[in-house]
Structure formats: structure tokens, C-alpha cells
Image (tube, rainbow, N blue to C red; front, side, top):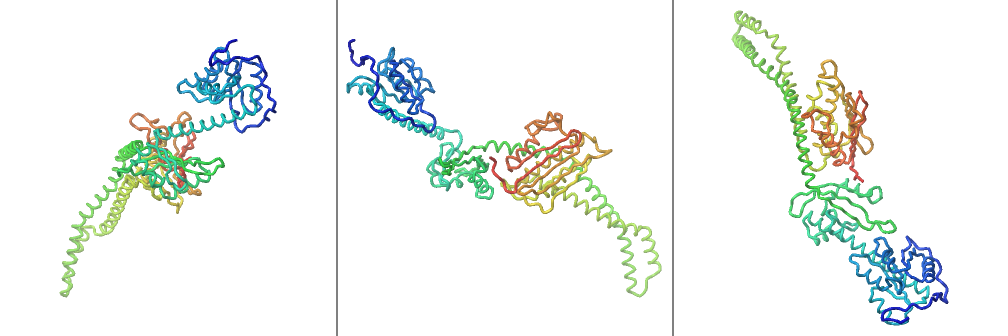
Amino acid sequence: MTQTPNVEVRQPVALPIPAVESPPRHPREGPSPKVLVADDDPVALEFTTELLSDCGYDVMRVTNGTDALKYLEAEDGPSLAVLDWVMPDVDGTDVCRRIRAAQNSRYIYMILVTARDDPKAVVEALGAGADDCVRKPFNPQELRARLDAGSRIMVQRALQESEERFQSAFEYAGVGMAIAQLSGRFLQVNQALCDFLGYAKQDFLTKTLREITCLKDDAETEFGLQQLACGSLKTYQAEERCLHKNGHTVWGHIALSLVRNADGKPTAFFAQVHDVTERRRLEEQLRQAQKLEAIGQLAAGISHEINTPTQYVGDNTRFVKDSWSAIHEVISMARQIHAESTTGSVSQESLARLGASMQKQDLDYLLAEIPRAIEQSLDGVQRVAKIVRAMKEFSHPGSEEKQPIDINHAIQTTITVARSEWKYVADIETRLQPNLALVPCHAGGFNQVILNLLINAAHAIKDVVGDGSERKGRILITTRQDGDWVEISVQDTGTGMPDAIRTRIFEPFFTTKPVGKGTGQGLALAHSTIVREHGGRLWFETEIGKSTTFFIRLPLVLAAAE
């Protein structure tokens, strides 16, 4: 056979059995690296396969270059290859060239095995794209050492590619991301976080995570971070107002997790900050619309509640006014008699006129009724003032920050505001634990939740008792403190909930009321307010034909949701 340039001549089969011992079998940590062995000599193929298997590699083997290309071009194919130079159809150098020429292909570490004892063979192999070249018959320890070196290179390349993918995903993510030291000092931020808060990347390097994001310096945040540090939470989450660099307010939802080393020791914080400004704005508009809707529904009843005491205040005031002329006449005669008494004696005529006037004006009646009229008027004024005060407290927008509030007082206020909704169909009983701890709340949101539950309870009872002319139902409201939680329950003696709707009552826009009677937002907003805004719980228990009880649990120290 003649030899042409750059083509290896296949010599008669010579087993590449070395004079040295084969390397011992080693257990490898982690998954075994995949390596493709391609050789058309069955004896050499079997020997190389056994050698590499004993070294802990996961060996795939083929007998020609075409099959080698098929496996190497696959996405999940091996990342290491030992290729014989001369093979049928496609030789080893052609395999290397085609693999290297493939666009966007993963990197494969390839070793060419050749019988050519020619220094130019190494140059040619590397020029074709091979990473290394081994001459037959090869030393098993040498082949293993070269393959192990290639394996380490591939691990390093994989780590580098993983780092590049992470950096690319980090930088171009649609949400704000940051990595910070445990002290809070920023190490890295992405462009989305810069755009969200208006700062340049270098601005972050002089600030801490707490200073520039929505983490507050309060007991609630400290409690959440402590839980995160001790492993009780995988992620600490908070949704707070942030101050944009140009001065306007934005809302951010921050999810904070710990970066740990191989020993499990925390080394850094990883933060994701989502811009929820628009969602918060829409939710606030919806909440205000729902509150205005509730006030609108209550307006007629409230006006009636105010009209009744106002009416008898007016009637009593007119009575006192009309009685004044009679009292004035009697007092005038009494003053005349008093004047006569200072001159010596009182005439019988004056005494007779006084007696007649007292009898005519029914002075005994006036003396009995006027104090009662004044007392009733004062009571009416107090009732009106109570309703107005309750309305003012209920409709007040309150602070954007949670404030400690008296839950019992808030419930009493809402009962007063909603009186026109329940007084005809139900009696309200309260069992409010005295000296209940103050609860950090958005007062307006909490009042709205209690109002929604009261109105729903009244409507459920109305379905049973009708207009309440024959009998009334009962609404029982209780409060109690349970460790670091305060629990509120609202129980009605209504119809209970059918099984078909129990899983849907907290869905937005779901309602069982006729068109125009309900929007389906009451319980959905109540759930959002209690669970998402206050870190609490809202659930219910119901029994068909008997009752439904809604339970609210609010934390005295708000814990972060996992």
C-alpha cells in the first residue's frame, strides 16, 4: 500500500499491550465522565474501552467516524473523545474538523491516536482541531493522564460557561437582582435594579442592601432576617415602598435568600426585587372603589340611623321652645310677687293670678317633661356623634405604614357603621377579650375586611329569616390572643355554604348574588389584605343550613412569608 501525504498507513494488527502495569481502578466522586472511543480495530477498541472503564469513565464506543460524529454532535453526547486517526468513511482528523466547524456547538475535548512516528503528525492533529495526540502503542498511564487532564479542562470550561450563563441571565433578567455581603454591602447589581431605583451601578457600591432597597430597619424585618439566617425560612419576602433617586415613590417586592458555601455556611445575600408599583396603584384604586361602594351601600341606612335621633332632638327642642312662653309667664308673675314682698306685703290678687297661671300652663307637667326632653336630646346628639365618629374612623385613609391599633375598638366602630345592614335581621353579640394587645395593621384595610364579613353575614341570615319581622338571626364576633397571634371570628346563623362554591369564594369577581347586588371583590380583597399585606390567615368553617364562621389570625410581630 502506498502512502499519500497526511494519511496514516494502517499497519498489520499489533496489540497495544504495554510493558507497564495498567492503572488501578479508582472510584470517582460524582457522575462518571462520558468518553467516546472510536477505532475500527476491534482488539484496540476492546483494550481502550476496558482501560478507560477501569479508570472510572463511562465509555461509549464506535467503529467508524460517521458514528463518532453522530454521538459527538448530539446535545447530550460525551464531552471527551479518543479517536483513531485512520477509520473507514471519515477519519479522526475529519471528525475533529467537522466538530470544530459546527456553529454554536458545545466544546468537546478530543485526543487523536496514531501509529505515525512523525513530529508533523502532532502539528497536523492539532491543526485539525484535536486537543492532544497520542502515539501507538500507547502507555495506559499516559493515556489516562492525558484524558484526566482533558476532563479537568472540560470541568473548568463547564464552570466558566455556567458562570457566563449566570452572568448573562443575571444582567439581562427582567427583574432587579443583587448580590450583597452579609453586612449588606453590595457586590453586584444588574441593570434592571438600576432602572427600577434610578441609580447607576457605581452608586450601589457605596450603599447597603437596607439603604437602597425596600428593607426597613424595624422589628418585623429583623424577625424575618433572623428566621432566614437560622434556616427557618428559605426566602424572606417583603413588599414595601422605596424611594426612587429622583424622589418619587415606587413599590418593590423583595425576595431575599442566602448564598451558602459547600459546608452550608452563609456567605452572601441574593436579592430579587420586582417592580410592583403599577399593581399596587391598581389595587389601591380597586380598594378605594370597593370602600366607596360599601359606603354608598350603607349611605341610605346611615342617613336613616342619623335621621331618627335627629328627629326627636328636633321635636324635643321645639317642645322646649313652645314651653318657654308658659314658663316665662309664670316666672314673670313670680318676679312681680317677689317685688311686692320687698315693699311689705303681697296682695291676694297677685297670688291668685300666679295660681291661675300655674294651673293654666300645667307647670307640673312642664317640670317633669322638659328635663326628660333635654336628656333625650343629649342622647340623640351622642348617637349622631357616635355614627359620625365611626364613619370618620372607618373612611379615614390611615397611614401607609402599619400602626398598632385596638382591634376591639375597630370592630365596634365597624359594627356601628354597618348597623343598618344587620339590625333588622340579626342581633350582634360580641365577646371581645379585654386588654387585647395592639396589633400592627393598616386600620382602613382591617375595617374594610370586618365590614365585608358583617355584610355577608347579614345577607346570609336574611336568606333564612326574611325581613326579620318574625325572628332574627345572630352574629357573634369574638377576639382572643393566642401567643404571638390575635384571632378574630365572625359567626352567623345563615344558610351555610354549598360544597360547590367553597373553593371559589376568595376568587376575584366570584359572587353568588344577583347582578347589581355584588361585585365579587369583597372576600377577594379581604383575603389579599389579611394574607398578603398583614402576613396573617383567613379561612372559614361552614355547615349547610346552620352557620358559617370566618376566622382571621393576625401576627403581633409580622413574620415573612416563605
